[in-house]
Image 1 (cartoon, rainbow, N blue to C red):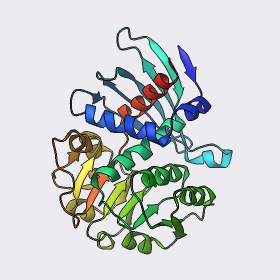
Image 2: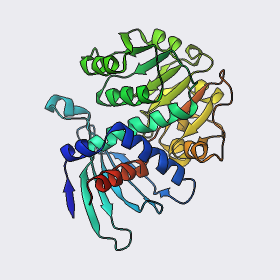
Image 3: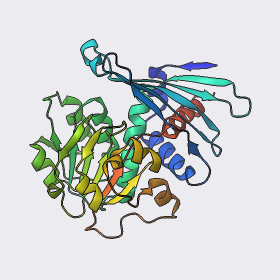
Length: 306
């Protein structure tokens, strides 16, 4: 069994490789790959959330699980709040073939999922990207979004007054201006909005979101969490990574009526439509599926020649 460190993962997995790994596994989910039920619970200790995500993709041979969760007090320890480890198994024998540090993979695969949704669902020429949330994950989200669309500016809601040096470096690399603004300004001015928070109540009202906007809601992955106004998700075209997760631990758990939800994999595979005109509002609920982690872990192992 190979043990692969965070540094090794960072050396072999970049945003482009993660994008295509996630895009491919979303398509595979429409033709035989599946995620097993998620276990995710509050520990009642350190305010932590802990759980397991697992799955199997026959097309790539990715079989395994991710164990980990969210420790909100880690910032005071100079550690990332999200901590995880990924196990890959040989589907022919059941033997564990690799154990990978999972923090970098989690960050890159989450950003890749958001970018896939933007690539498939956002209007072709958006002028403004709105970023709601400035934690560790948001820099990855920013870079992934800038890879798939050209924007004139980035507007960020920085509620926690965090240092945005890394964000500004990414924006400068892609030649895009960046500014901070109040939340209402961010939401009203953007044609693509990424929400990446740990909130348990809606961040902004439905009426702030204008026609043609694509919202990638990436923070809701636990019962009770919420980022979006249910009136927004009710009126929008709804897409997600995995329907069952979305209804149980994702953003669409807050809809009281049964509604149509389209897997993003069906759009990629060509069996379902995405956006059909520029005035539609689209919402992608990124709950985070185990197959995303396994696909990126498999890509690292392959790149390393293991």
